[in-house]
Each structure stands twice: as C-alpha cells, then as structure tokens.
Image 1 (cartoon, rainbow over the protein chains, first blue to last red):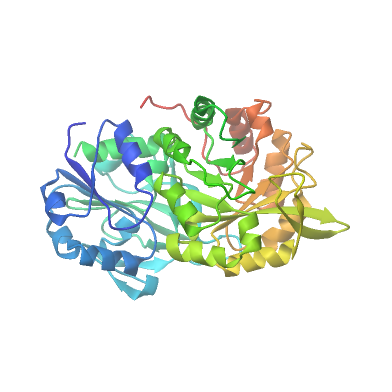
Image 2 (cartoon, rainbow over the protein chains, first blue to last red; image 1 turned 90 degrees about the horizontal axis):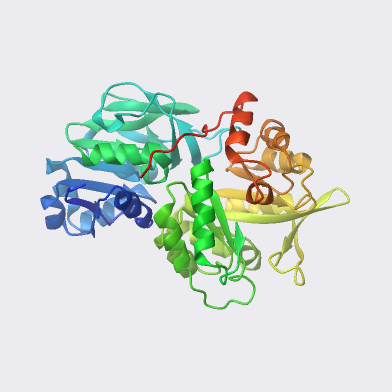
Length: 198
Length: 242
C-alpha cells in the first residue's frame, strides 16, 4: 500500500509487532519521534503501552501534545494510544490530548473478571465506520488493558468486560482501537488495511 | 513450543505458522537453552517469529534481568514469562512491572502436590537440578500478584505429560485467590479436559503442547467442540491470505 504512514515511537515498547503487521500489508512505516516528520505523513499511528501520565510526559517532551490535535490526516490510536485521545484518564489522574470528549476510567475488578482484561473478546458494532469494513458484529479482537472509555458519541464499537466500553472510536480524522489490531489475526489485518485506505 | 537454540529456525517458524493458521489464540515459546547457566543467548529468533505471527506470543526461559526482558519485547513478543529467576529474586517481578507494565509480565509456576499440599519447584528446565523452592503455591500466587504480575501460568507437575486431564482441584483453589488471568498447564489429553478446566476451574486459558504438536487434537476441532459446549472463545476462522 503506497501510503506514507508513520508510527509515533514515544509511548512504549513493542512497536515491532505493529511494524510487522503493517509490513505484511505492504506498508513500511518508519517509527519516528520527530513531530515534523509526523506532520508530513499521510497516515499517523499512535501506539501505546504502559501508564498514561508517563506516555503524556514523553509525548510532551518530544513536542507532540500541541501537534497531535492539529493533524488533519487519518490518525489511529491503539490501546493506550486511543485512551490518550480523550480528555483525561483516571490512571494517575493524567490529563490527555483532549481530542475526543470523555474520560478513561479503571475497569472494575471483580472475582470473576481479572484485571488487566487480557485476551480475545467480541466486538459489538454500534455504528458504521470505514475502519470496520468487512468486520462483522461478534468478531473477536485481542485486548490488553486495565482502563477503558465508556461509550460516547465517538464510539463505533463496544466490548463488554464487567462494563460496556469503547472498543473502536472515531471523531473526524481521529480513530482509535482499545484492542491490538497487530495481534488480532485477520480481523486486525482487515482493520489496519481499512485504515491505510482512508 | 519448547526448543533449544540449535533447532533449525525453519522448524520454529513453520510450527508457529501452523498454529497461527489453525487458530491458536496465543503461543508460548520455551527457550530451554537460555535457562540455567546464565549464558548470553542469541534471541533474534524472537524477531523472526514476530514477523509472521499476528496473534500474541510469550517468551519464557532465561529471563533474569530487565534488559533480557526488554530485548525480547523489543523484538516483538507480547509478554515475557519468568519462573525460577522470580523465585531467586522476587524483586525482579516489581522491576519488570515498573518498567513494562503488568500486562507483559507473566509468572510461570511449577507446582507439585505432595500429600494434599502444593509446593513450588524451581530449575524445572533441567531435571537434574529440579528442587523444591521452599514456597507454598498459594502463598507464592498471592505474592506475585502483590508484586504486580499480570498473569499466572500454573503448571501442575503431577499432571505434566500424563494426559489425564488438568488438575482441576488445584487450579480451582488457585483461581479462588487469583485476581489476574490464570492459565492452566499440564495434563491435557482429550478435548473434554479443556471444557472441564474452563467450566470447573474457571481458568482464563488452557495451555497444551504435546497434544497439539502430535496433532492428536487439531485446534479447529477443539475450538468447535468448546463452542458446542457453550464456552465463549474465538471461533476457528478461515484466514485471508496476507
């Protein structure tokens, strides 16, 4: 796929699996921590693992917190990267990018629901989005998280884990998946291909 | 899948691709050469595996430091699993969790039942060195959770390789005090053993090696069987070509 996709490299390890998933789609996406390089990209991916406040400080130090809300090309936040698109996170009361209205809360812990929520879970598709083309209601995606955003105006798909939470969000050119498309077998490959075609 | 480094890389990749295509939900690689003597090992195979897998995978064996874990995660593994080094130095768990987050840090526990009591064994990668660690299993399960581990793989040694079913009683007792994902290991021989461990011990996952390697239980058949039994799992799917 002939896009100029760039992966923002500030927010944690495990970028190799995402880069490989894109390579399997024919997309060689460089990993960059340079806001100027990211600004010029046709598509931007913001992956993230770890704690929200640490990720926000790293984005801030690298000069991304001002740039990201102004981007007009398609942007995809993955896992913590999606959570950072919201106003704030209950994780260490971190203030986030404020691109999507709403906040991210801790998943409730219950005896029969271990946290982190780690594993395959079904998507409940609520509204049309090009990101979910060829993906069916009830298909399984791979999740790893302890925090989640409640369903809101930007929600396109939800999943259920003690609570119903946003699994896919979309607002203008900003998209997010709480699950890991790079680890979600053919569903993930389909979603990433859909994103690259935007 | 368990291997030593001299095993041809092509074999590892071929097996990984086979399980990926059969619909395995996650793979665990036990790098048994990396274990007891603390030599530096070449882990570039992790990167080759990451290149072909689109499901999560975990690497176990010889992870003694934060730097070991970092190398494996940077090569594209989803998780690292630590067993004996966590028993020798429990603070390693805290340091791994602080650096990478709970979700990456799996603790492997080899537990042996001895007259109704469960004890943790160490150096189980080497049969000549295998010995009791001095920890009781339930206490160790509590401790690793308190230290922030994100998942426990409980290998019930009495059942390992026996193919007579998972140790339901032990797994249920651990489940009762385990608030993080619990994976059952040791004893799978028939499809009914899998449904039994999910329904009776409420585990989050079931791990098996020999029945899958030998194709005694094909993964798509097992998944269809479990779905029939009312267990919610990702169905086997026809894969699109990449």
